[in-house]
Image (cartoon, helix red, strand yellow):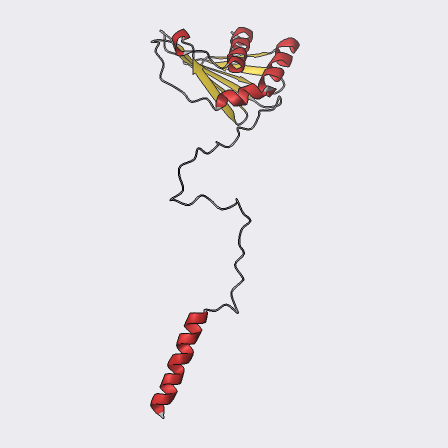
Length: 170
């Protein structure tokens, strides 16, 4: 009799294991089509990089210029209200205020979607020696270029911001 009850216990145990604990676990939901990631065996497809958010005209703008024959290291920071601070590689600090026209132009340039689009450009090594390298940060958007004619065209909106800031704060 004991072996019959042991057999019944084993059968009950196996039945429980095979059925799982479905009564106490939440039901699994199937995600909608297209929301599942590609399987590892799926062919490689290019994936779009997440879009770079467009900067707003009310963002802080930071321009860093480095390189050149003298090995510059200058940073210009422009606050949303047009106040600027320039610090060179020696730590010397200058301050000022953009004119109304320069501030309006800066706001238009940094709000231009082309600035964010230029941020997605891949960087390539430069063919120039002692060229200036510019790094422009506007809010969460960061872009830059090396001022080397043989490297190809620099992002036009970023170049326009650089030229405006160098001219207005230099």
